[in-house]
Length: 423
Image (cartoon, rainbow, N blue to C red):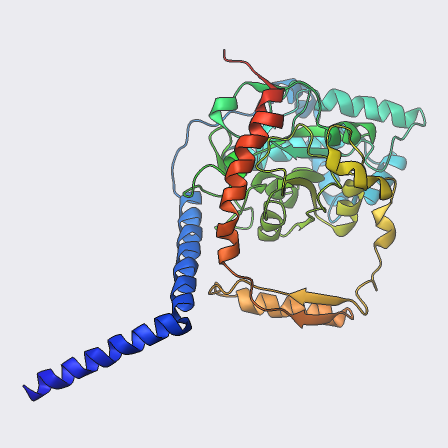
């Protein structure tokens, strides 16, 4: 009886302590742990799904038929030579190769197509569709260059676009969804027209987390019905999303640079996971015209590249005032700005950089990597300021905004502007 009494008293103390903790602030702790566990569980499940050995058969096959003859005529020796010359090459370095007649845009397109065929098909799955006109466009850019006409820094440079960005060519605009398998845009997105004006070659469209990762709470980063599962080129790591294909194609050197889109992390997260450089521009700097949206309140397109130099050059070509997107009226102040002028090796000296992290248990090696980044910033002369942890609940509070925005955006300025061929 004495033992039972002791046990009973102990239980009462524990219950009382728990109640005090709950009402005295412990409730926040338990809610936080619940959210942490939900985040960790979802991330773990996403990675597990990415690397399941499943033979998915719904993927749209890439069509290499417009390029087969030219690819067959390109020797392995020439491919190896180009490969060697492009190691760590930035866009200005590629332009120098063009100027010295050591490389042509046609050869560069063929080189990337060779790599896509070798490494992407049924492996990385970062490309959802190829532009059948890419080689012909490259030949025209070469002709223009020989005639002394260079449109801009991107003249003859192949880029890819996330599959939710509209193009008025032979490619589809699908956001990876089966329901939009035959959808085509009635015209180029504003940013696409600017890329073409600057001389860029649209090589193809990238796979993505379907509908920009806003269709289910059980999605797999980098998976779409039309594109299959995009894989991380560095191994069995989370590819992240939703601009997964854009980040992977750049990291695997399947294209020079790419344009993704972001609502909340969809450009910078996959770039981080695949060791790329990326930026989410301020809203209104880049037009959202003819891009299948989630919400106007947060959406924007953004550049993904292998270097800060290339990212700045791509950003230069994307910004501008678009009458179809009223928010871009404020971009007038920066139109014509060359962001490469700010590429200063000493640019971080005296800068105060805030470091904020989600209070979620880190994976093995994360903290070491984080400390190395802080050390690099300090060595460059920056003052690092640690900020309070970001509240996990903030992400959940966005859901009503995103849900409303998707419905309103698609109805108002998304799919209603796309022609869906129901063959």
